[in-house]
Image 1: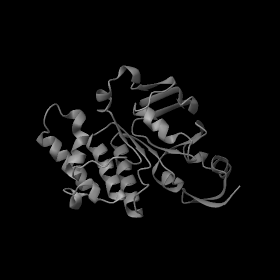
Image 2: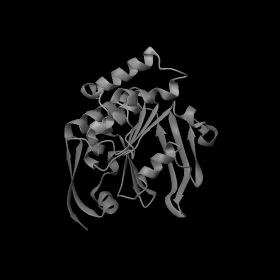
Image 3: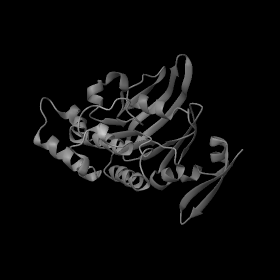
Length: 254
């Protein structure tokens, strides 16, 4: 079942084309990695898919309905987005920040269910000891986990994350990606923009490669070849396949 369909999508900043004729589908319960060099259009594509940015041309459909016909608040009941960073750190504590993820579902005041969902997400992301601390008292990695938790509290059907592991230590990188992988087993679609190809290969079943605003290649692990990775990044690599697990080792720039 297709959750999102993207057709002939273009986006431009100040007349400069950043996304060029993007076609793709996001299926229910699929874990997708967006990979590619800096400036390839990964973050811009995620913002278009969350309706933060409006495409220059083309269409996006959610379960067959055009994004243009869906109110932003209604869309928030299905889609959650976690940016790579937030420019402003609000003066609120961790619990209240995560509770904000329930906003699309709250008509007036939070219910006991909203509070319980928030508490469970805090526990799942190992944030209990920080729950009453203010965001400006946390490290960048701790704040990143809070923003991910806020998105999970939203209980979306589709979750977009821009570099969710960028500020996390190795343990929390694996924990977060494992949580996201488990969400897909419950039918939630997850799309992450990520730089670490090895983590992408470990957790994601679909890889979409972007270069110069275009889809360079997409598919499963079968598209991971030395030639494709070298042409995508301009770096010589060695690929090791051990027990059906791929490891990419960069060797030198071309």
